[in-house]
Image 1 (cartoon, rainbow, N blue to C red):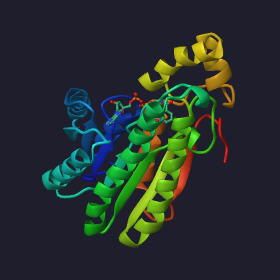
Image 2 (image 1 turned 90 degrees about the vertical axis):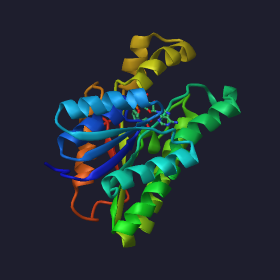
Image 3 (image 1 turned 30 degrees about the vertical axis):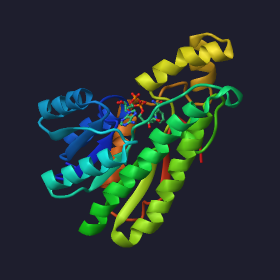
Length: 259
Ligand SMILES: NC(=O)c1ccc[n+]([C@@H]2O[C@H](COP(=O)([O-])OP(=O)(O)OC[C@H]3O[C@@H](n4cnc5c(N)ncnc54)[C@H](O)[C@@H]3O)[C@@H](O)[C@H]2O)c1
């Protein structure tokens, strides 16, 4: 198994991409701390991991709550004796053009993605530095590298996470910490399903057209990226054996974005 006995914490892992990564990590032998807003959703992922023979614990952890992040990360380290991998995955979306965007909505999106990624990083690095190393992974997006209309706070936050990932790669190197950011195209999760009717309304087109003319238009094959695609990349990045792969943004988007 590629992640035998590694200790991993994944935020927003109660559903969607985070859950798919948590389950893949469980199958690859990692002990997985599944963090989400509610204990119930986190427990659903834990149950699936345990059913498949893996080891996991559920954490109720809002990534925007400084003390909750510190307490939960410390708890994982105390339970299992360390922390090898931390994934800042929790995220939300908000659809609005910039000129109509409420400041509160801007702040909410920035808060979950960027402040949340910072808090998780700071809490994790303390332990990784003490134990001689680890892997930070960030769930960026194609929107870490380019923009789409109606998503300004998301685009700004995802670009910010790319910057944080690179800064951590530079600072973490002397402590044995690698840092990379995964940049998926569109994946069918609740986050994407919710924005299809919202975009259709805002753009005055049908939901089918949002999918074909907005979301998948620039892919090479008109296909959504899958949960399995993203989870496989997250396993690969965590299992990579050296610091040759650090500070990188890896795009998994059916060719929507080529860098
Ligand atoms: N689905 C896509 O097409 C896509 C593409 C690129 C990047 N992403 C990114 O992948 C990540 C996961 O997205 P998803 O599509 O699985 O979405 P999702 O809505 O299915 O899951 C997001 C999870 O994050 C949790 N969450 C939200 N706010 C939180 C907070 N403050 N603290 C802790 N947990 C919180 C939610 O409860 C949920 O379980 C996000 O960062 C998203 O931006 C998604």
